[in-house]
Image 1 (spheres, rainbow, N blue to C red):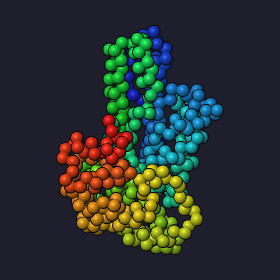
Image 2 (cartoon, rainbow, N blue to C red; image 1 turned 180 degrees about the vertical axis):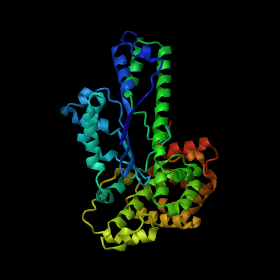
Image 3 (cartoon, helix red, strand yellow; image 1 turned 90 degrees about the horizontal axis):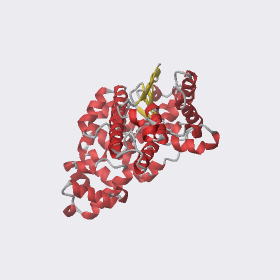
Image 4 (tube, helix red, strand yellow; image 1 turned 180 degrees about the horizontal axis):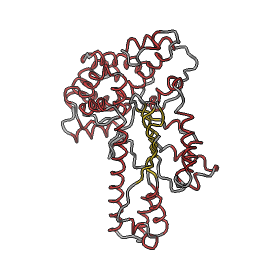
Length: 419
């Protein structure tokens, strides 16, 4: 097993930035934490079931407080900004952030506050805690792991739902930097140099992490995804990868409706994972149990009846799915119809199923299919619902004619998107 801790690169501005006599003790201290903090903890080939584990911790400038049991809630709040990505032996990508327990977060804080070379046992303890929850044998994978398939993140930096969210990475450094400028401890020239250095460092380390993660993914599936024009969307990658026999028609739909990429990932990946779980949950003497996991939808739904009453299949409250209304019977029904239509290559039925899912006219979806507006972006499903409803209210005569018109429509439909 190969382990590595990735950090940002050194930069010439560090000579001034780390000098307490030049920038003040607080900013110099936070700059040192920024320089020395791990941007990613990487385990390559941790077991026969996994190709890669990638833990992206946020920068913690108050490790002494986080390590104190009294501040457990502070540790939990900090841990909400962590990312833990796994790539299994089949090339599927998982987001295990929800499985980072308080105990694991405390171990992570201890690890970040110490030198790995001086205390290697901390790394072993952290990995053992992760393994206890996520590296167990296949029966647990069949019962639980499917719901952790990544449907959200993208590998590109500075895009919505990027795996590399900068807003929560180093807030204390930026606040202290602005305060130092306000207090005239630093001048505008040094302030600009520091901002440029942060941008260069973050871009560089994000590219390294992205390339590392992409190297563990299936290159053929990534090539299909690249041709669709939706970008490096890990949810869409999983959707193509889950059933290689139907990857071509799925890629075709993504090419025609790139603006619905997040919807396809959020609505269809969890459903297919549940159907595949139903197949793997068949009785040992059932012939379906030994069949390949990637099957057509009708067979999967038929097999799903086998495990429908299994009491061990506990459901959890998914607030994201509830907000997107993916948990309703209406959404589930039309997601199943949509999945069948896509895998059968029936474009007309695909358009009709999407229109029924969002309760809009078929011609609205047909026009999106025909024009594929880039300005629509890839909004999450609950945003997409509001946008499509606003389009439907305007009718064909008020269809956006430019990128600015699309942005105005999105801002009107989703007030949080207004600038």
